[in-house]
Image (cartoon, rainbow, N blue to C red; front, side):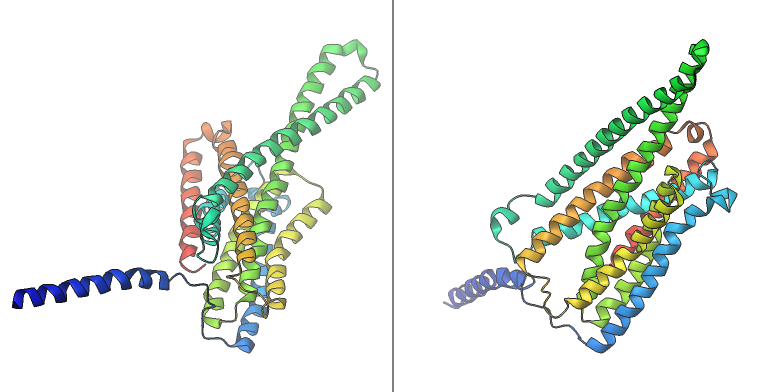
Length: 343
């Protein structure tokens, strides 16, 4: 009899656990706004400081590789530039894999969204893959289109010079000029697409920081995003430097990058009273944009930055430079991955 009573108690406890455990698990996945330590006035001070810090850090990062005209060691043909670019590529790769793609997955699998289709299919991965393939196509088609038009222009200019008696010389010269022109066009397309991927993510994280009302959340995020923009700026600045844009275009691209996160923070401050991070529409838009940004960044880091540089004859024929670039790559990826602890 006693054993039966104990058995009944045991079964009742197990039944209670079976009922309660799922509800406890679901309790972590709530769509209610978290009641953090909110202090609007203090939070606004931190946000203002964040705008200034991130603006300065982004500007330093993106303009640093552009100082090649002044500092010879930072010129694209120098070994130091390869190592800086490898470090920046590691940062961009880590940004895509460790920061942006997981954020996209978290948004698109939120319990605040309907189970069908958001919980049944890895849409973040699909969007990232689609935009990675799209980036490849943009790279290929844009480079092909502009190179054909420029080659025709070069050939026309050569023919106008009247040097028909030196046809072989003209043909060789035209061919060499065309190859250089295609390389520069590819580098320019690369820099513009990379900036697009970085800018999309920068605005989103800026809005997230600006909309927050908790000083405890803003402080570590502010520090992390300062380094985030510094490192990403170095990667973008390296690409802009190699593309050899005109001074006006360089200034516009570098300034635009520097301003994106501060503008995002300002937008976040403006909408902080109405912004609901658990709103289904906000989650879907944020998730899709983050996934698209991740696809672009991952493709650019692996294909346009790392593959191009690590297959470069200069690096292939220099063992020490290979080691240095590899260490720089791992260091950049590791440092950026470490920042995921705070942002």
